[in-house]
Amino acid sequence: MSVSTLNATDFIPADAPSPLPDGEIHLWFFPQWENVPDAATSAPVRALLAAYLDRPPASICIDRGEHGKPRVTTTRLEFSLAHAADALLLGISRDLPLGVDLESAQRRIRSACGLARRFFDPDEAAVLENLPDALRQAVFLRLWCAKEAALKAHGQGIGFGLDRVGFAIDPSGAIAPAVGNPWRILGLAPSPAYLGALAWSGSVSRVRAFVARN
Image (cartoon, rainbow, N blue to C red; front, side, top):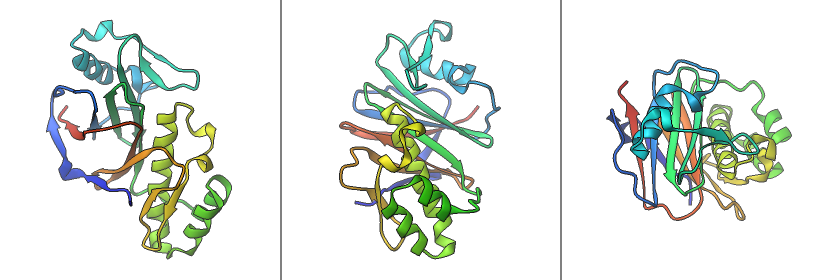
């Protein structure tokens, strides 16, 4: 089954989080984001995580796992974030491993085929080479987002190897997890200027998407 996509109309404007039941994933898109050295510990992210936990922001302790994945210590809250240009994407769940990635939709890859041959599975690179030029850029970016999101969910990040998370690509450019790829993927287009992906494992009843008003 090909990867479906949440579009801008699926992201609901919100100021504060709704209740987060087990088995649900919440996405937050910040369309105006000031680049800071560590977004995971920034005031807006810390405040949002604290609201989900019904605790003061100052009480939130954020550290990083062995491979750099941020986490809220001594809680069931899982989160992942990605920054691109002037926007930030944040994914939150309870006890569900997840990862997100965000890229500028206007980003132009000078040598998509060369990068695919270097970093992707050989079958993926071969399919990309046979796509029309106009389609290749978009498919490369969607594939890159899906792979990065899955590797973030895995916890080891891009250093684990983009080729180790495989996807099938059909002639129309649609992608789907390949056989042996355990990660569920949802494409994201929170605004015309950005595209991204959410990856998770486990049973998910619903994914809800919000765009921060502030």
